[in-house]
Amino acid sequence: ITFVNPGSPVQPLLMELLNSAAENNITFVRPAYFIISGFIGIPNIRYYFVFLCFIYILAVMGNTLVITVITLDHTLRSPKYVAVFNLAFTDLLSSSSLMPKVLDIFLLNHYYISYNDCLTFMFFSFTFYAMQAFNLVVMSFDRVMAIMYPLHYQMRVSHKLILSLIAFFWLFAITLILTEVGLLTRLSFCKSVIIESYFCDHGPMYRLGCNDVTHNRAISGLAVTLILRFPLAFIVGSYLKAFKTCTGHLSLVAIYFLPITFVYIFGSVIHPNARIISLSITTALPPMLNPIIYVLQTQEIKEALKKLQTRVHVFINSGKG
Image 1 (cartoon, rainbow, N blue to C red):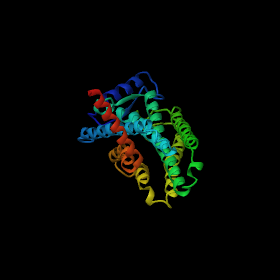
Image 2 (image 1 turned 135 degrees about the vertical axis):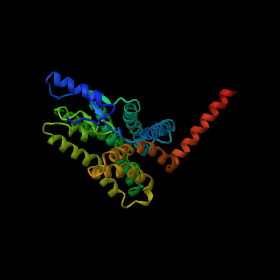
Image 3 (image 1 turned 30 degrees about the vertical axis):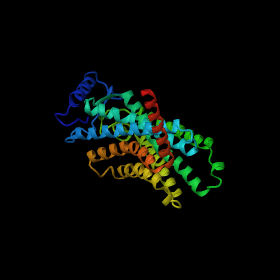
Image 4 (image 1 turned 120 degrees about the vertical axis):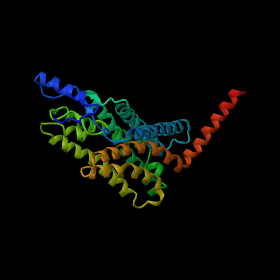
């Protein structure tokens, strides 16, 4: 069994779990709890949590604003803004499924999480994160079609097509992640119950299994290929002819794909604490930056914000009158 460092705040709980198992002569097939080790041992980490909390608040405010503007302004009804709306919606879900739990774990010292809650946490976090990548694919498809076929864009790209693509990717993401999480239920966790990550991460979790993890390793590699490599290759390939006109969207792609790709490629050679910090930043920043980039880069949303601001002022002044 792998133990945490002496003096760690999670050690008493772990010892209680292991001693209980030893007394009853049972094996950890499905332990009652997992321990999220994450940021434990990193000095001055509470200041970093303040930073993550600030990012989360900005992400919620920014994406809520984008959703509100697109919903209220009837001029933003093109297929492009269906994809933008879904990106903001996915970013909001992604941030809200991950950051509050991370802050709860490490600010309030709730390091343990039940077996079922951990799998549920993993399913929603990975599904929303996968949809962020797939939604960037939809947006790149829409952008390239608009550039390559400007006169026939409206005939080629319809609301039905964009909605169908988004629905397909949602179904695909749910199926892929459900399979990935489902394969974990066949593992016997007799090595340890300590997950060396800041959330219920698939890789660190399946490596705790003491039986055959071949299928888990295979589905993990498949998921990385389908969620990161293929979308990135498609987006880069589709924008080779239109690089100068797509800098805004390419910045979203770079913010999402480059850090997470670096972590997964070089994660085995960097310090575990550095990997955890890097991974947490790559999952926290995109939902915050996406709405900022779109507000600054998209003229239609700027105009819609001005209209919304005018409506608010009129409403406030009418209330005073």
